[in-house]
Length: 282
Image (tube, rainbow, N blue to C red):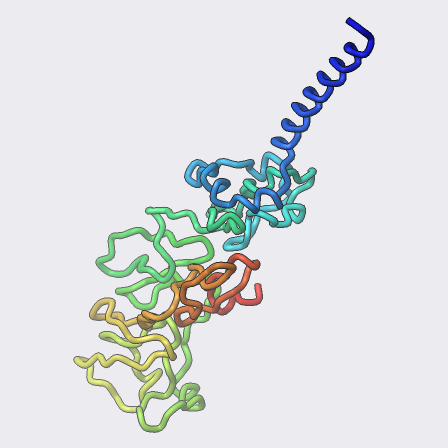
């Protein structure tokens, strides 16, 4: 073999080797920008149910993600939670959420800490006690079982104010002269029932055999739970997006107005969600 042939053969082998290394490097270190171009293929490879992708706790996660906050997704700033080097695996990393919540994939750009359903736990504002009640008594995290009367207890947010004002206090907060009702009943509070103290809201006396439904705060109606307990519950809003559902984002074409008590909050360019009003600035 001539000297020239040897040089050509060596150069060809070097090119092949270099191409092989480059291809391997590309597969291992593909950038998020390139992954963004193939969100459909990326989602096909992500098994939502099995929790595929790296777990934040195994990659040096510094703190749990709070309930309903973003816990991953393409272009998400994982450095806020990670102590190590963030690689292209960040596109599929599900961070660890606070107890009672799991990181769920909403879309390729937005993972969210959502409440883990527990059949042994009473849902928010659900009944958890009372005479004749034989169901579950443990409330969701952040809620506690509060007795409204001997016949009905419900799961309220911990520390939630329960109205116990006197009739005199109610008179000072008169909201309408025509209805005879001193004040509207707050959301989720009792608005009537047998043996209910109507004097908190009404000037006229109520016959012990009568149990009228009081007027609730805007967006809520008085619903009969049982003969002894009526409750102010959200009115149906067929035109609004349900709480915790998507209401905006790039390529989103659905409704953007949320149901009563919720507002549409933007998490990033690709995802907006209906959240409780009190969490709008959280």
